[in-house]
Image (cartoon, rainbow, N blue to C red; front, side, top):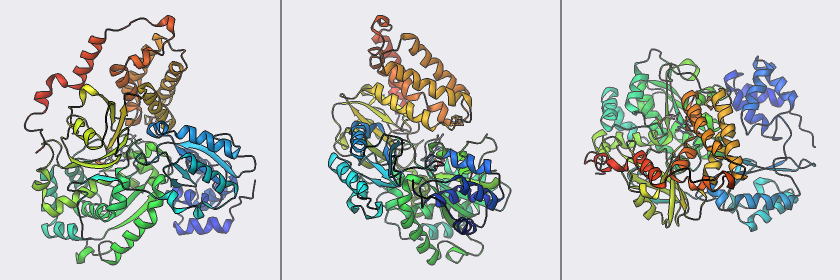
Length: 601
Ligand SMILES: Cc1cc2nc3c(=O)[nH]c(=O)nc-3n(C[C@H](O)[C@H](O)[C@H](O)COP(=O)(O)O)c2cc1C
Ligand code: SF4
């Protein structure tokens, strides 16, 4: 192994740049790791001294994030995205081929310390995979030819910064545009419009729009903003959640690439509404490559008077935005875990109440919104709340960006008014022979073909954006098993039901996969489902059994054919199961469900 010492002057430099603030610990660790790829014990000790915190605290934070390493790793760190869609495109075979060409075992650095090859949770490139991260930079459209090239570049020790640019080219793949993706925003125009309305009228327009959060939960944005505006305390904060860790989701990546001004302007509009002076954008570590362009947009906005003091000349309207990086932890997308992470700690979800709107970042009233939610507020400022609410359905106004991947001719980004039917989306993206669609990522819902009349809307099929297509050749048991492995890997371990429940669930799925499963394992799965749903501390644990329960209900034969043959007996009546599935899908009352109120306008 080569020398990895980080000098005390390097440590002092980084710590001073972060004003010796303990809440910058995560950002400091990310920077200190940069040169050698890992954090030696002496660095952790020196850092604890410099920040005046315990070494156990520093080690606890460093140990929490999967992109931070307290043991040596290879100089080339190659992490394959572990998304099921990429598996189906051959990512595991490509990884095995790379390991064999480099003579390394997966998940272990090579003996000479040159390279390590491993996996990581979905990196947000499902439309152009298989993909991997090479020292943090996404390498896309992997093929055997590209794998051979990578192996050669590593053997020749060519720095990743000198690899062919084509490896790193990220396509936006926008196939359908509506109001959001057609927006050609003159920076400051939306802000000017909201300032002209005055604070109270701007909030009223937000109420009229009935905009609901695009991060998954669908909470009404104006209600959140009003609660924060009314909370006592002058030092309010606006946080943009750009963690986008749900497998199969990549629409925030495209918004940050193509409409960064609208995202930052949305944060500024939120600041104007609630009276915030500080803004933070939490950018997932996988999207770190976007940071330089985002910083350039921020700098441009500062020089144009759209950030900083007296924004657009308005006395007392001071607001600026800083970017914080995540480091590979899906749970940090949960808003309270995200706040902990922004405060430099482990991403453990907080107990609520209090809610972030009253006690958020550093105990201050904080609005947390998704990237797409914030960008959408520009449309409301420019066209008014009523115009925004005129698209979509009564309960789900406006449009939704979908990230489509899997078995279809044209994967990528599609924007639709809320209320669009699944079958319409499948037709547009060129899917045929579709067996099932997983909407909303691993935590979402698996729809069978008899449900394709259903609609994307909070009142029917809600989604943060992922839309994964599986044709009839796919094994849906393996899809569910991949999602369960994802949750078991990403469980933060804070509460026992989730820590133990997700790994028991994975064990049961692995047992079935190995052909050792019995009917009692299916009963166990149902028991674990109840445990996770009822006793988990946050949404990760309660959503973890969703993919298994959905596939068990709708695609039970995929499980039953794996049972030990002696154990197999027709344990269920297909007609009863189908009827139950139809009831669960709401198909029986479909007519009522899609009354004129809900239909797309
Ligand atoms: C495990 C978990 C992961 C989440 N990941 C994200 C995420 O990556 N991005 C996001 O905007 N919201 C995510 N959320 C939802 C957030 O907690 C929160 O509801 C959202 O950021 C609020 O913004 P919105 O009201 O604009 O949707 C996640 C929730 C859970 C439980
Ligand atoms: S449910 Fe899982 S992810 Fe959430 S706090 Fe508990 S252990 Fe952590």
